[in-house]
Image (cartoon, rainbow, N blue to C red; front, side, top):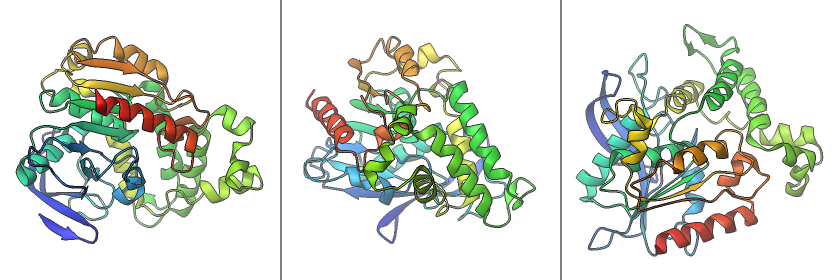
Length: 339
């Protein structure tokens, strides 16, 4: 373990990835909040989402909030390729290997066991790509996970979701800075195009129809797009973004070795209390995906589907400035943690 800035780094050593490639000196950046109790059973794992670092998501961790550090020991592991954990931007490994959620969760588990001696998780909570990691946690380590909250996520990247990401990838890589399968300079035009593509998918039809963006101080639609989306991804390395898109597209709990591609078997392996919270108007992770999954969670202690009643699309699951959606999620997680 090493400390860097406001986070720590778990040095996992040389790791054999699911792809068969060995990643040398793999590093997992993480941050903890709260205190681990004597029984080591008050642990919440909160994986990061697409392009996010722990500082982007830790707003959820606050006294009396959705994840309360006064009661729980909360660990935010930074997903690989986010610029803090091993990523194209901070690694000399070229080409950067294809990492999967299975790989990410395996190293996260090593961190918890080897660094803290943790064997039980009170909750794995995740939004979007974080939700997909939570699903992998519940399926691959069923005896360790007591509860799983999958917010705007699914057990696999659906074909529709995959196509959305192909559009994002095409917009980004159309920039002339993309050469020989990687970016050789900052792709300013590609990043802006990526943001515009994201804007059309991230929010719902009703969000734009009702001009909800005016509630957040924007004077026009173009003002909203310019200030909210044109630079949305510019703070991240473009090669990192491409690597995380790959992780997202490969997401599928049934591809973990023990399931051999059998999704029915993978979902049946889950024993945790599962809360599926899709966004009612989310276009990335459609409610129908969770509706199909919940009937196959046959061995879960409980399995409930509670869509977030919101017109904020995918962003309903990350309601930083949205009190209504935040209140809904807070109440649902409070109930889950009391079960």
